[in-house]
Length: 210
Image (cartoon, rainbow, N blue to C red; front, side):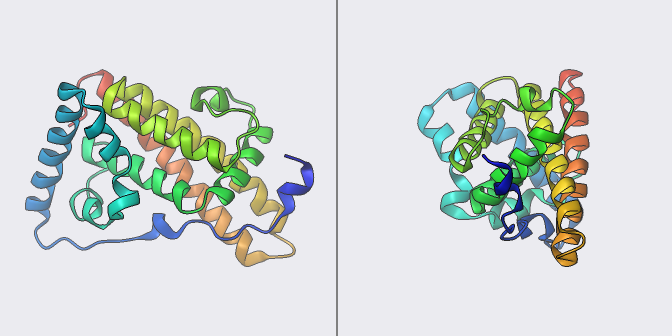
C-alpha cells in the first residue's frame, strides 16, 4: 500500500460498536448469557465438528448480530459472554467494511512500535480479504484452540487498529473535523476492547473467566 492510500477518504467507521440493546430482566438475561456462552463453547470444543464450527464463524453473516446482542451485549466485558460478544462484534465490524478496516490497520501497522502486528498475525501488507480471513481465524481459534491466545490476538489487532485510527484522525483534524472526531472515538473504543480482551485472557488462564 502506498503512502497516498493513507489519505483516501475513510467511508465510515463502523457504527456497530455504538448499538445498544435493552434488557427486560437483567438477572435473567445475565443467567441466559452465561449459560449460552458456556454451552456454545463446550459444544464447539467437545464435538470438534467442522460443520458446527463453520456455522459459528459465519453466524453473523447469515443471521446478523441482533440475536447475539440480546443475549450477550449487556454482559460485563471481563466475562465469557462479554468476551465472545466482543469477538463477534469485532468480526462484524471488519466484515461490514473491510476496506476501511484495512486502511486503518495498515496505518496502525506502520506507526505502532510494539509487537502487536506480529501477535495479531496479519500478513504485511494486509488488504481487506486478508483482514476478513484473519478475524475469522481468530474466532475459529477461540472455539477450537487456545481461547486465551485468541483473545490476545484480538486484543493485539485492536491495538493496531486503535493506533491507525488515532493517526488518521490527526490527518483529518484540520480538513474534516467530523471524520477526525469519529476516528478518535473509534480509537478509544478499540483501545478499551483491547484492554478488556487482554484481561479476559488472563482470567481464562487463571480459570476465572465465567
